Length: 204
Image (cartoon, rainbow, N blue to C red; front, top):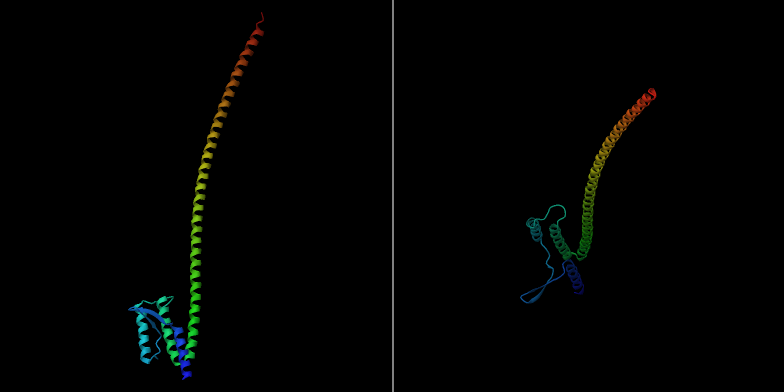
């Protein structure tokens, strides 16, 4: 029946879009593995559920947050659900396939944004560390300059004190010499005055 054949071909195309045929070589012979066309029974679904729970535990998938293992396991589960739905109704299968592709595209976009945010955060962190290192280095240099200036100020203060003490000593010595000179001059003047008075008092 051409109609049934075309419907079966559409189902096969949809299934191949879900999980493309896998080629592998075994014993020197090339094999192509296709998605199973066998509808799942209730028992198959229960076994699949049990298998999912066991793999989540054995592969140590995280129950919350971002987990590539859990994401991969549920992606495989979703593909199996699409396969089962497609075998019953190809149109519904194609719709679910579109939903899956849209979810994957959205997740990839979020992953890129997340990776970009992580990279940006790392760059900012590196810039912050570099800024802190530069600031610490500059602060260290400034403190060193301040210490050198304080030592220079202390040396200048000591020099000023020595100069002032030396000027005071020189000034006191100069005053002492001046006083001594004045006394000597007064003594000489008095001697001359006495000699003059003596000469005038005893004229020859």
